[in-house]
Amino acid sequence: MKRRDFVKVIFSTIAVSGLGGKLKIMAGNKSSFPVAVGTWKHSKGAIEKAKVLLEKGFRAIDVVEKSINITECDPDVMSVGYGGLPNEEGVVQLDAAIMDGATLRCGAVAALEGIKTPISVARKVMETTKHIMLVGEGAKKFALANGFKEENLLTDRARERWLEWKRNLNKNDNWLSPDQYHDTIGVIILDSKGSMATGVSTSGLAWKIPGRIGDSPIVGAGSYCDNQAGGAVATGVGEEVIRVAGCHLIVELMRMGWDP
Ligand code: ASP
Image 1: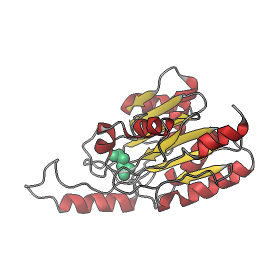
Image 2 (image 1 turned 180 degrees about the horizontal axis):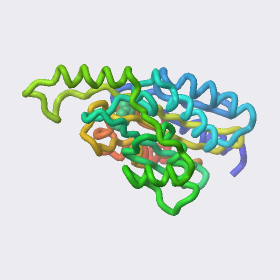
Image 3 (image 1 turned 30 degrees about the horizontal axis):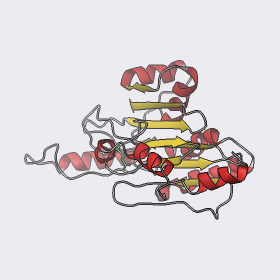
């Protein structure tokens, strides 16, 4: 394939999709390499970081990880990493996934506790094991064995919000109550060589049942990318995304020629 044709394929197919209602689209043959797209306002710092790294010639997969780390470590972002809102027992459980569009290699962690940067643990899973997803205690043990530091991820602010939620519970509440606070960071990077990578990281739905896993760590649901077709990342109520295997569906439709 000639580079020109490659550019055409990639740029008509890059998408960021918010399946929870908002749809953010990035498309068009007018763009030029490289490209960085992120979900929500809280990806601003991540995308600024991505810009710097892309200008220095970093690979898409590195840029995805390093840019998402910015948001994960920001205590003011209450739906991702450190400072994320906890589950119903007051424990922060994090989900993340990363995918390399050149090789289709991917890694994910789910319900991971005590580690600030789940996207980096997901990358370790991808690069140093033959598995794709590690969950809960196993994911944490793996992270610690790989030099990640255990930290308290529940900030005072998040704890206060959790206590307030608990104070306002009443006997009619159930697990079917309306959705709570949530917002995943999802990033799609197309690097200067035309390779793509995607990543997502989240604390999931606030006050979730312990052990609940959303779409984000499920490759094909919360994110997917393939250099030959495009990439998609999702944010919104994960159960809705999982139901339709959202991101894989989007990428396959783009492969069939659909506009992002
Ligand atoms: N998709 C995430 C989840 O369900 C939440 C979000 O993106 O807002 O865990």
